[in-house]
Each structure stands twice: as structure tokens, then as C-alpha cells.
Length: 115
Image 1 (cartoon, one colour):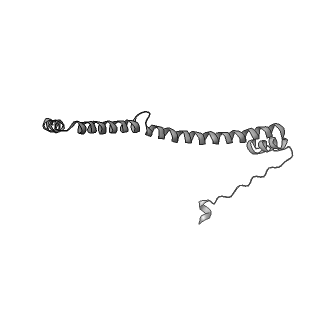
Image 2 (image 1 turned 90 degrees about the vertical axis):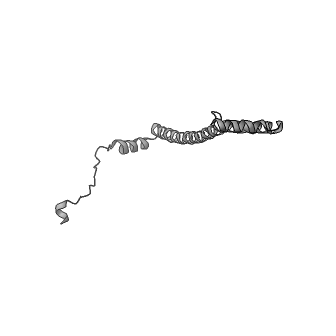
Image 3 (image 1 turned 120 degrees about the vertical axis):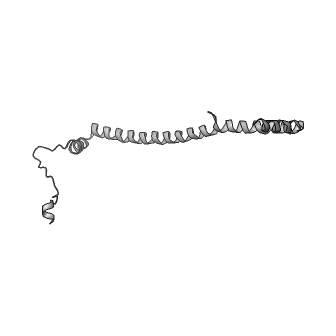
């Protein structure tokens, strides 16, 4: 390890001032590029946040549509007796007095009848 470092050091000492400046500039550019891409405020982090922002905007739009549907249903329940009746029939399985409810049950085949 030490031999490699000594070889590098002696090679760098032979460089001209312009070559040393260019090498230092390249090292700084590489370091700054890596920091710009992978740091906390780098491009990768910004990209991740933009994807999350797109997801949240879509989720917000979906929730707004759902709220509008629920608001419309609430308004109908406040003003339309037919809407209340339909809700009672569908969700609570209620019937009017005097109505007869028919339930259709499919016959399942038993193993004895299969033979």
C-alpha cells in the first residue's frame, strides 16, 4: 500500500502547475457532482419528492371526488324522501308494512345426488 502511495506522490510531484490545477479541478467537479446527485438536497431526493408529490396530488383528487359524491348523497337524503327509502331498503333491508319479501335460494347439489 505504501509503495503505491509513494509512486503516486512522486508522479504528482513531476506534474506542472497547470496539470496539478487541472487534476484538482477534476477532483472537485467529481466531488461536487456526487454531492449534487446523492446529498440530502440532491437531484435524487428531489426526484423522489416529485414522485411523492404526484401521488399525493392524485390521492387528493380522488378524495375530493369521494367527498363530492358523499356530499351529493347527503343533500339527497336531506331533501328527497325517495333517496331515504332507497337507503333504508338497500343498507338496512327494511320493507314497507304489507310488503312481502321473496328470497331466492339456489339449490346446492349434495354428494348423494351426484351419483
